[in-house]
Length: 326
Ligand SMILES: [Zn+2]
Ligand SMILES: [Zn+2]
Image (cartoon, rainbow, N blue to C red):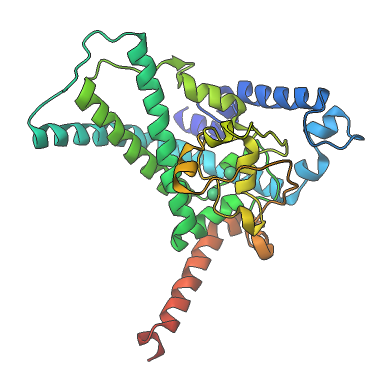
């Protein structure tokens, strides 16, 4: 039974509020898009009917979409077989280590202990959790773009030539591993610091088992991986990442490369100089430059291409080094 549940895990995602493609999040995504269509608030071809606007054939029959669907199963099985069993204990361990280290280093404990938490404390903890999670995401997303070895694996996500909610799952297992470990380390250390300062009486405010703020972001998160152009007012785009800003992150245009690394907040991009706010609608092309997306045209190539590229990179480095010429 346990084995069957694991095999069927990819099919259970639309019923899990922790998943990106939970039915409510999909419903709200396409609901927002429908409103944009009705009120003519977005880029759309006047000849398209609603169904053609929501699910264009050129996107949902594109070979890249088919490739992403196949990889979706690999990502889901990676989650259920590796991430979920390994990460929860690790999270607790890292939090405890941070907390204990702080006590031992400073000789004091729970400096500002809150014994009877009020709503304001729960809200603060809920916001704090989102901030450290999003900051962790920004840090590792920056690194997987800047470090050549990690970039070869993150290229899988950027090889997507069409963006749909499934693109959120279009990641190489090693890229997921590196990203999850880093985010977990940063967020667990943050939680450890919180417990050290204020005690462990606090809990996040949850809705369907999900942090209430994250739940609100997830209601519109799928717009990021979609063809719907949704931009926020200029000043809001400096705090929250709009769907269009993440689409720009996927653009092949060199002026868009290495911009908008945040998951939900653009605050970090603003602080670290990687923010790009579109002034108006920009027609975007997605994928890797110079036709490199073609190297990821099958499930086998999605899984193996990053290793081939790393191997070629290391060969080149060896060949160009003085010892390599001997
Ligand atoms: Zn990226
Ligand atoms: Zn993306």
